[in-house]
Length: 444
View 1 (cartoon, rainbow, N blue to C red):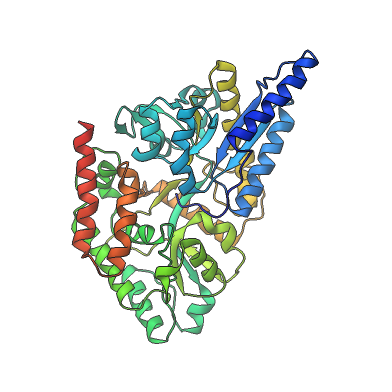
View 2 (view 1 turned 90 degrees about the vertical axis):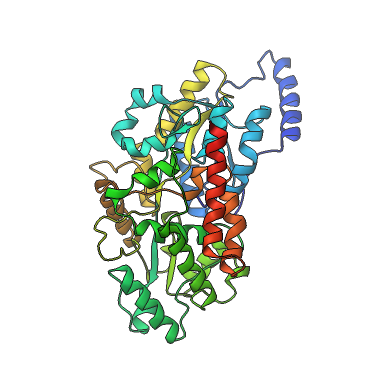
């Protein structure tokens, strides 16, 4: 849910229309139609270099297998997608196929306005429910204002886990062992700080590293057997964010920010820049997601593990799930276009695509084919094992911002205030809960 960097765009709308008009005139003069029924306008959020390369190759392979079909690709950052997607589809200038962020603010809002088409027909046709678990597919279901039930409006190609990146060389040089419990992690942070090493890499100027840190710490303290309360919050069934666990997590992160546990100057560093600093050997730990695997593999000293659980929690939850879902928009006007879109998405979540993602170092949501033999990076090997364990334990958690249409903005607005000490942890959590309670009230 936190992809950024650069944007790859097709022609602006006004230039594209002019070009189509000229091309149309030329085609008509030859007795041909200007319409390209098999053009597919596709938006995705794979803007990292490694991710973009995989998508470009998959698109070429799909075109090769479908003569006459042309993929018109636009890659947008996560934040850009949130700002422009709904407006573009509403205006009729958007994509036929798109990646869309799950949750009330994006997928939920678009379903409510009739801008997305259900994909249940293609789940049955292609057997997507055999490739991914029902609990994963449930993250793309909406029935009115109800999240997690009803018709399915998308499916994802990549799995996501927010965990603990570590630099083994920095830890070894400081005489610090990998923590096995949350209590050991706290002790390790103190040792690193005493030795003058930045315990955590952090960047809070842009993106959402702090959000992921707070959520990951909180959910590592929740045993999967007790996940119902969190599920109810995310799926809009009720409850409150104002819990002891959330307050304690916010308090701990504030103490780290105020106590010198974060990389110096983190307030002016973006999340993506913080990741690059970490890759260059700055900071001992970083809490973020598997979507950075492709970048992180450039430093062989970097490893990845689950946030260590506190004593007494046997099956800790991890923030995560899947990347933005592939979905079909209302701009797929006829059944032929809808079926072509369904076929494209099927390829994007196929075993073949999963093998391509794994070969590039990324964690696929679809299992690899039995005969696949990609050369897995150590990071991806760790990620796959974590993915298997989390699914076996029903311990795959949630992004807190999925819980209401405005929750991401509420968290982003208040996180800098929390880290700077301008508001208390209680006030931070209260802002989240006020946002959520207002959403529940509006749903009725």
